[in-house]
Amino acid sequence: MAAINLTRIKAVVFDMDGVLIDSEKFHRQSYNDVFKKQKLNIRLSDEDFKRFFGRGAKQIIFQLFKENSIKEDPIKYANLKDKRFREVIKKCAKPLPGVVELMKELSKEYRLCVAS
Image (cartoon, rainbow, N blue to C red; front, side, top):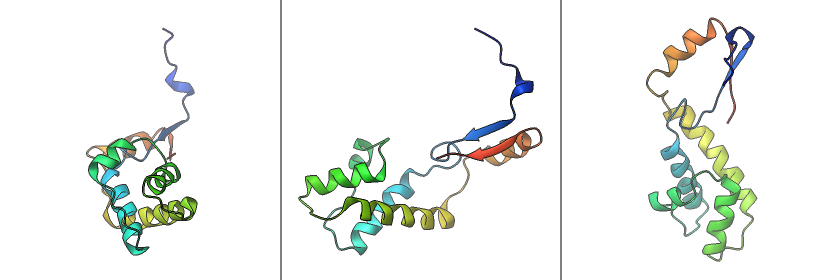
């Protein structure tokens, strides 16, 4: 295995979900907030959320609508869910333990960014 030349690294890229913040509960809350507000008879349970782990909002909503015979546009609801998620994390999300310290230390030598 070749050694990594750390002097060539110019930036560090982080994923947000599960790396910088624990966002799982906020995603589930966002789905359920949208479904309730739009008067859809769907509730995403913990078990449902685990079943859909790793999929995007469009895929999840498409599957839920199919399973519940809902003839609405899943893309519209995925966009509503994503908007709601951004609102929720702005108010509620906290960095995971050690994240702030790590970012401060890394920022002394590297450019940092988030890709999610």
